[in-house]
Image 1: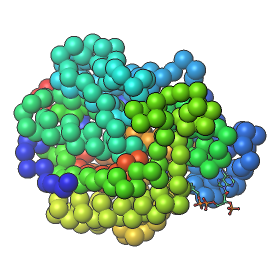
Image 2: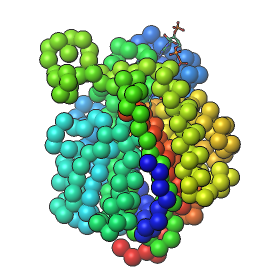
Image 3: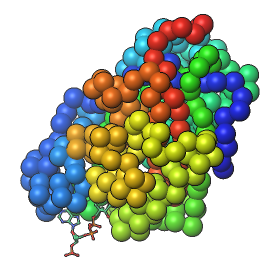
Image 4: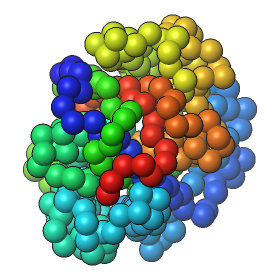
Length: 339
Ligand code: UT7
């Protein structure tokens, strides 16, 4: 799916993030599985990741991020029309984490649902939020990207457990007078689905003593295939969305790719011709937080002064599905629009 944003202008008017307090560094991880700080750093760029406390589920990571985003936008929970939580680690299979979150935010007027597109979830959810506002069906949408992958990675499998972390980021979307989203490009290739999946716990392999004994409730990944996929789609999707929006790669002020692996990001940036100064990276501090990755990166980029009013921002995500998605937008800071 590819399209230009021809409707009403919509932008991010509030942004908030939350990462659990507990930091798990590579050295500590090396005492848990047969790995080393050196291997993890050189293969992935990751130095540490955050791990949710025992009492924290995904909605608990969403809540502080959402509250910060609402405060940033100057919007109350009761004013929201729609809450979308992009996640693959919902609190439970149902009800949705979005409905739990909406209740905790006092968003009693809002529709709420979860969206499953792996690490691309946040970009997919932005597209939905944009479309709903642009079509006039909603005025204020909360989009959250959040995952607690520490609960579903196999802590005995060194090929996956070193890669992931927990975190959440939230944005408020509203109509604006200027700036906002220019175009989206999204895709899915279900043929590659088994390269990154959780075998059991759904209707095909319901939970049983057998599935637990076979460790089928953990993330399984064909790392090399996902690596090849990631390097390909990060480039093709970004090129497509820039082209359809009539922008040039040279126009991009900040490139915010999914934070899975520094090598993948550097490869994509080089192929696209975006030099280091215009690429945002924080995978070193959080690892791969799946749906939380792009909003956490936006939050850190803004905090470090790299996301300014009027900046042209390119985001690309990729992950389970296999899925990918990009958007290009002009960042809006300030309050000259009407709430
Ligand atoms: O959001 C999407 C989520 N997933 C991704 O983005 C992952 C994409 N894939 C990757 O990032 C990379 O494939 C990995 C980082 C997962 C692996 O890097 P690689 O350079 O492709 O390593 P590899 O799988 O080819 O493994 C190289 C070696 C193997 O040993 P042998 O067979 O060469 O003796 C592995 O057993 O490294 C070994 N290895 C490790 N060694 C130390 C695998 N994991 C580890 C580890 N520590 N944690």
